[in-house]
Image (tube, rainbow, N blue to C red; front, top):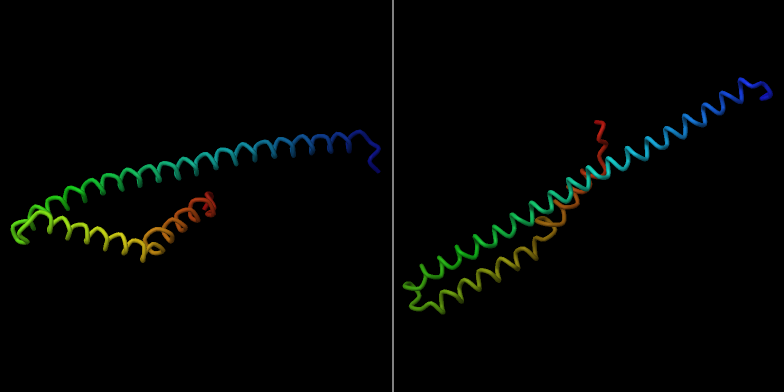
Length: 120
């Protein structure tokens, strides 16, 4: 059945084509993974920079608010205590709403990045 040279030659050619296809798929997977990791790391760096800049801005705004409240409250210590209370309330709000603010957006971003078909 497989005795003639043409059949063996066809199988060899099929084997080499399949091997070439697997190598190309391996390269494509590497390229796609590199692209997605680049997007992931650049997004994480951008978010980190924005968080740091936002914290610096919030720090100076809260200092300004403390000095604005000083004449109204009669002392700098009382105004800084109110600012500390505002910070504690913000921390608790972030902890309470962490699923909506942090976890869900991160899961959606990663799912869209790694699970969507790039050909669509």
